Image (cartoon, rainbow, N blue to C red; front, side):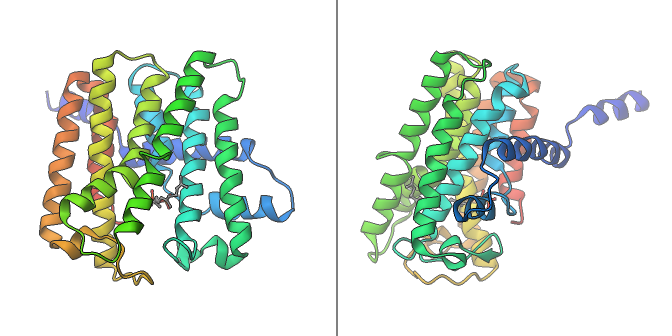
Length: 295
Ligand code: GRG
């Protein structure tokens, strides 16, 4: 019996290993889909994309698709597309006209390394490449699924998603932010991209409406918990920001309250996975990782 139990434990997925091996596949595909030249734009793209990014969003696309029975090769291009978009948002977010940050992933931000014009244009290049990668005729995904994916991504980063969230955040400054306002900003600026990563993985497999709704809710909850954890890490690490009025849940409440809300979101996210049974183990562990991570 004991032996059987041990064998059972061995079967449990080691999430760190899953992250490591999935990241290798994602990076390989990113290399294949990005320019390799010695020109400034190619170098700027590589400077940003191949740094220490965790690849969380593409890993979520792949984990969701795999849970639903997809082969990894079906999900790899949509996964790369979401990572390119994520990198584009980081470059633009760091610009002096938005958050004015000097460092990202432990090194100078792109506009600091090169200049603002190169940073704006590199962001534009990554956004365009993302849609190109999504539309790529690789014969694996049907045209109707590709169109659905393109529509999803465009909605998530558009007026009611990332861009709208960022504009709301900036237009509210420097007024004191209430917790519901902060949550609404986080829903749009961080959770929308994470939720769309889950939805992309689901759309690849033509899921039912009920499954899509459950998974969307999972994505939104882990997305908000992700940003709350980011706020905690920023607070603990004493990161200094030039724009002092940027929202941070910890500063508007307390570290305990922020942790409590993040844990509650993860609990809700995991409840939604019950419907999928044991095959949702990786998504469940990703939810735990979101609040347990230390960077
Ligand atoms: C023009 C679509 C568009 C966007 C501009 C700037 C902006 C609007 C939105 C900001 C979105 C943003 C940067 C949100 C912060 C989310 C966040 C916590 C990012 C860090 O994510 P990690 O930790 O990054 O996954 P790594 O480095 O691991 O890739």
